[in-house]
Amino acid sequence: MEENLKKPDIRDIENIIREAGEFARKAFLAFSRSDIRYKGTNDLFSFVDVQTEQKLKTAFQALLPGAGFINEEGEDEQGENAFRWIIDPIDGTTNFTHGLPLFAISVALQYEEETIVGIVYEVMHDEMFVAEKGKGATLNGKRISVSEVAKLSESLVATGFPYTKFAWLDDFMEMLKDFMKESHGIRRLGSAAIDLVHVACGRFESFFEIGLNPWDIAAGALIVTEAGGKVTDFQGDDGFLFGRQIVASNGRVHEEVLGVIGGERFTKL
Image (cartoon, rainbow, N blue to C red; front, side, top):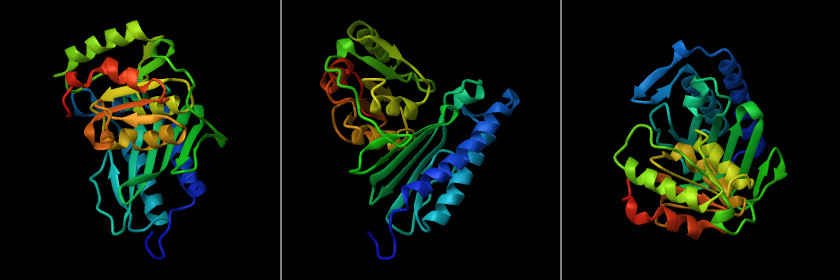
């Protein structure tokens, strides 16, 4: 790494995220539907997204001066060094704005475009999922790992439904029918970050979705891989971060999941 520049202590990153989470928690409990704003059809946000992101950015700028940012609410910022933060201040905004207590703060840190830290904080249940490259993954300080289920027929699968662009909706619904027949069932929680960490700790065997952005998945993808799982795009390749297709699994059912998805049904977005 660059001279006089090193990765921040993971505990400092966690503390910043917990502080932002406390703000989001209090805002959730007092939130009014009149505070909902729209970026586009079904694409919601609120002052909580914006202010949570700003709190995170300000703290991370002080922690690691000169780092770049990819974030949901503001413009991307080119850094002065090889570090880059990828931030989703509220993953699960639609849940948040409807009073459903299922949302997370997702933060990844990259060095030379490789993700080296991933943290997903599931705010209302106080679950902090943490991974460092090469050091495994934890939930509230305890080591986690993916499930040992070896068959899709014995698996619980998570997904997210298209909600702003519907060109591939018919193919997607056909795919869901196949998964309903081939698995224990499908869950849709409304937060890709939470879906991913549930794969990492063995609650789900797999998660797949189309149309996601880097801030939705960067942290969770590292947590899955550090917990022993596998993450690819729909074709089984590693271009998922910017490719807008992701499949995460415990590794054991990955090929079966890819087979049901059928990459030929979906071109890269």
